[in-house]
Image (cartoon, rainbow, N blue to C red; front, side):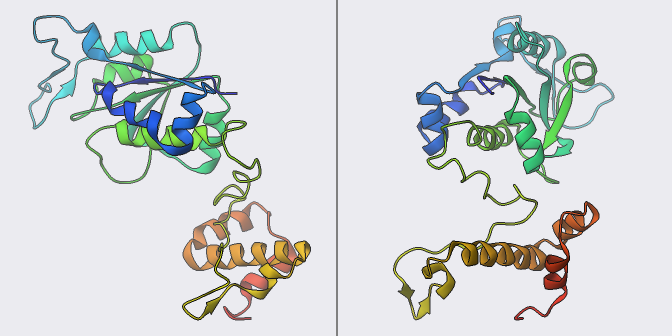
Length: 247
C-alpha cells in the first residue's frame, strides 16, 4: 500500500494546491499518504543556485544540471529501494494498468523535468523508468506528476466514498465506463433508461456491460481489439459487438 509520494521538482509550491483539492486533498489531510517535495535548488552551489545551463553542442533552451538534480533524487530515495520515475515526453504512456501498479508501491518517487530536459547522465545513473501522459509536450513534469498523483491516490483504501467506484471506472475492465444518470427522471424531454429504474440488478448489470462495450467500440476500437487479442470477451459479447449499432 502506498504511504509516501516524493516529488523532485524545481517548483515545490506548485504542489501545495493538491492539499486543497477534493479526494486528493482529503487523502493528504487524513495522512493516508504523505506528500513531500525535493527541490534541486537546495543542492545547487553558488550565489544564484543555478540548476540549468546551456546544452553542449549548441541549440535552443537550457538543460537541467546533473549534480543538483542527482542530489535531490538521492534525497528523495533515501531509506527506500523504490524505483525512480521521471515524467518525460519519451516515457511509456500512462494507462490504468500502470496506475494500478504504481499505486501498489510503498513509496512513489516522481522526477519532474524542465527546460529541454535533464542531463542524460542522470537518466542513466538514477532514473529507473519514464512515464508520459501522451504524445504532446508540457512546460514541465509538474502537471503530469499531479495527474498521476490524483490517479494513484484514488485507488488507496478508504479514499473513495464507495470501494467499488474505482473498479467501475473507465479502463479498469479494459472498457470505457457506461453512461450514468441521476435526477430528474426526465430532463429536456429526455428520460432515464427504463432499465435503470426497474430495480432489476441483473438486468442493470447486463445493460451497463453492453453500453460499455458499445461505447468503447464506437469511441476507442483499439481497446476492443486489445480485449479480443487477450481473449477477454465471451461469445455473446463478440456477437453483440458485430451487431448493428441500434440492435
